[in-house]
Image: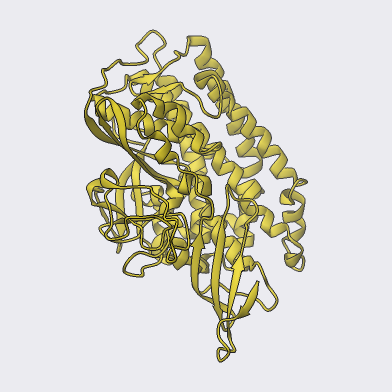
Length: 492
């Protein structure tokens, strides 16, 4: 829907975009458009769900059952965050086997999400008739047209193979109860480790044949922007090379830059440290993350308690039935009062992956660098998963036991596919007194705060081109989907 913003503003219009297809959950974006480009954006999560309120007053271990129901595509990550919060309250450390198995389960879900995003959510936009005049269009249409693309079908077969890992280790997906504060409920026997390696080998073969056309190690070793140019010009045929061609033609590196401020809680712990480091990156420098500096601002959320920002341990989730200020059910998370982008790009930059550090140094976080980060991370994570399987000791312990105290509080911080996920748990009198969740898309799709500072997506949309007659601008869709939103997690 478009209409003049005011009778005297001939070049300014308001454009309501949504609901978006091919995103998880409900999403609407209000755009102020001036002179053919977005001048301001307001991102709305229009569905309230209330899981945080549902958890209050329950047995703490009910979080392992209820929290994963927040989402059907990243439920393992929600399980892990809940388990970590419970472990923190108990002072419990998982067994080594429990940690390796948890890493494998979380990584399986995250890699599966990356494959789904690229093949089913992001790339089908380039198979639209609006791009029919581009030289790469026939390939894009053949490989990624919704419901018909050959690459999409084959990669979903590989994804289904990958999910066998969750069948072996978790028993079911989504909403498994296998992840516990002290590890996992099911041991993997020696024959199971062989099946796990065979499964990973089959997925590796599919990605090396169709997605990359090259060994995963070659993708993981990419270190400079010039190597991507060489791959686009002379590299092996595959969906990766096709994406590089499309990105160069459409200038995806010039779309969707936000604040270049990135946040990661760290992912996949091990005795030698996490595979992907924790930290915050801004103004070209890397610093540690202090979770006590995280707050949520309710100024433009349809929530009570707007007087000041709240740390999650002091946070509330009370809908405001008389609200006339808020434009979304999403709160505004801030770290030291500033918005941060989170996701695969944040993880890779904070971990020092050379290619992604080079891309961010040259052009910041944008549509191109976000997609490249997911693809590189897919290769790196699959390689690591093979090592975690080999580290399993079938005869060792799989789950440590602890005692839940009557009082306590802890945060469970992890990385879902879309970025930093935190559960903040307070126990009083043996029951959940308070439970607060900040999901990755809550960070990325946050509204403005009390200072009027837009969230990352709102900032990234400014400057997006709106062609004459467009009601759902292609540039806006590319930018939105580059963040891979999960709106059901956003307002849980």
